[in-house]
Image 1 (cartoon, rainbow, N blue to C red):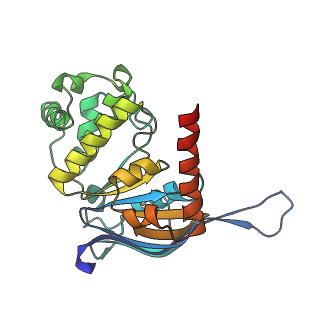
Image 2 (cartoon, rainbow, N blue to C red):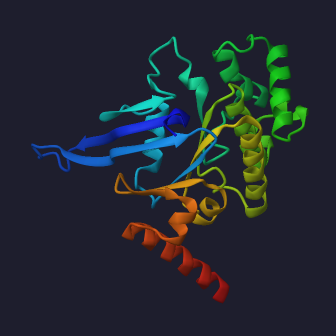
Length: 270
């Protein structure tokens, strides 16, 4: 399986130091991510679950190079992940779909500029209006939106349309790994289903790998190949999805599943 690894995270930590009061002499430490290690395989959906504040989003920022690591190393397809290395195109290979489809889009830019910007920056297309509109129109077709949306602004679109635009922007550089950070939590149920179906179709067509960050264990059970459980910045358990739901090995994993069962039974009784 080693040759099939697309991303390898080895002993990665992110610690924040701070003073509790103005009179403190020694800094305190928050261990947002603490010695995390795991592999993500090609053509896999790797789910990362855990309560708010467990380190899921910080982990995604570390992978994307948006936050500096305190320690540890990350490898992409066997090469050290270093976004400062201009000879490598890691930013093209790894993209993220954010939770809020509105705040992640620049409200002052038309859709064609938002979608085509990564392609222009990476030299895939020229920075000409005609080329950018045509490029965006093609990507809009892929995500099931009409070409005319290319000339619209984000506020003119629905939540589901904005999230599709976000997906189109990710696809503009043909990534091999896509991080999905709660991609449907801000959408209603019917729109969420449409977006998830689109993501699954795109995965089947392109062979992309997904890191799926979510609170929704029902989605994990339905979509993920493996599950990584985080608590307090650490990994509690990594397991195949079926094994995780049938026989979780860590007490915290069991408590997550029990809370899921409790919520489900409570809703049925309302």
